[in-house]
Image 1 (spheres, rainbow, N blue to C red):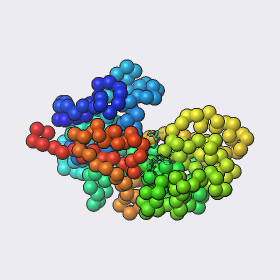
Image 2: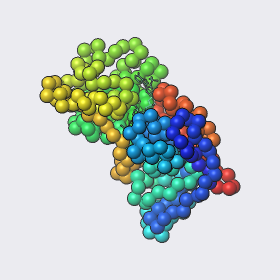
Image 3: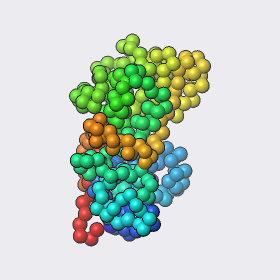
Image 4: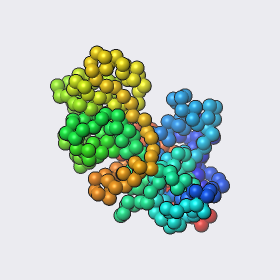
Length: 320
Ligand SMILES: NC(=O)c1ccc[n+]([C@@H]2O[C@H](COP(=O)([O-])OP(=O)(O)OC[C@H]3O[C@@H](n4cnc5c(N)ncnc54)[C@H](OP(=O)(O)O)[C@@H]3O)[C@@H](O)[C@H]2O)c1
């Protein structure tokens, strides 16, 4: 089968589409013929290894896990003898820790995997898990109650579009911050009001929120401390520096600073599926690229300006 591999850390050019051995499912695994996957900021971070810390998980000098790709949607091609929930031909979606930038992947039956939501395309189903996983992790840090006010900064990205939809689902009053072009999109996802960051600085408007979620790693607690209500929570997605302040912030300002960390779970994939089927959640796709153009797709993701998600479509030929 064909897969995108990287043998060293570096820029997008280290990615190569090559022939590799097709995996065989173990007893408790399903083999998925992938039709769509995504390029995420996580893929980019692990490949560049700019945060040296990530090498603890991927290999100190060279990547041990050569095939990136977390989100996927496709069809079950084969199942192990102990698999009971999935059958050959089932349309499935979910997350595999590494390996989805390929034509096939093996996944444990108990992994974050589910039957695809009714009526959804492979492209859409591939693009719903990663942003939602981090958005849910962030929202859970904030001890949500319906009616609370939340400001989602960077509302047009993968995590941002997920956070707006989930916060709206949980009954929060949602203020979204994005640039002019995404105004209509984030309103359609459930934002109650939108602030265009190219026109106004939300920290200077005198409005306060119970939760501020920096979905794009561009804020700091320090910058928006005056926009948090007393007892409010600032949740970041990046920037450990914020956490260093946490004890002081709690002591002096009686506010919380915390960081959401992506955690993929079977429960969350199924939860997102239920929301999709109830019409409460949808995929936001900016661009689609064929797997062969993974380098171009990656370069685009690394601009930091994608709207929602970037999908890789995986075509299969006779050799697959
Ligand atoms: N903690 C974790 O476990 C974890 C895991 C993965 C990723 N992350 C982090 O999560 C963050 C979000 O990832 P993502 O994939 O959602 O990002 P993304 O999709 O690449 O974000 C792109 C969006 O950010 C917006 N944006 C860019 N500059 C902005 C600015 N100065 N102010 C406001 N919005 C701005 C852009 O909107 P406009 O066009 O409107 O500018 C664009 O729509 C990243 O910082 C990533 O490193 C954290």
